[in-house]
View 1 (cartoon, helix red, strand yellow):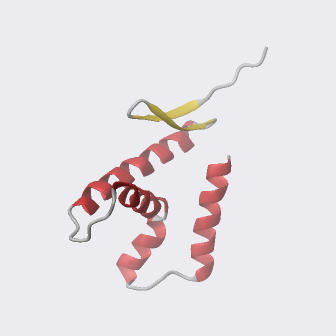
View 2: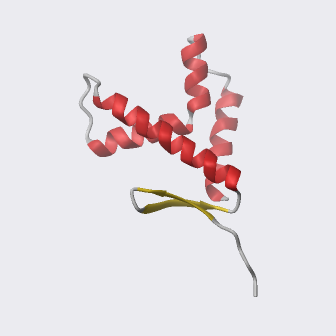
Length: 96
């Protein structure tokens, strides 16, 4: 019999993602916390977004926080290689 350890991220009673590593599960949970904060902040925006649009935007911004941080700090887009690397690492983590 095989035993498998699985870390599950649950939000509002719904399973969001499962991982074999606690570190990855914690990172995903932290990213969801950031997305929740961004969603709350975007609700206060003068631009009215539908709930689904706002949630998707918040999640996307949280998933790409390194690129967003670079833009806010420097006023410039990071190099295309950095953006591609960020996108590739997100895809790799989601596939795992």
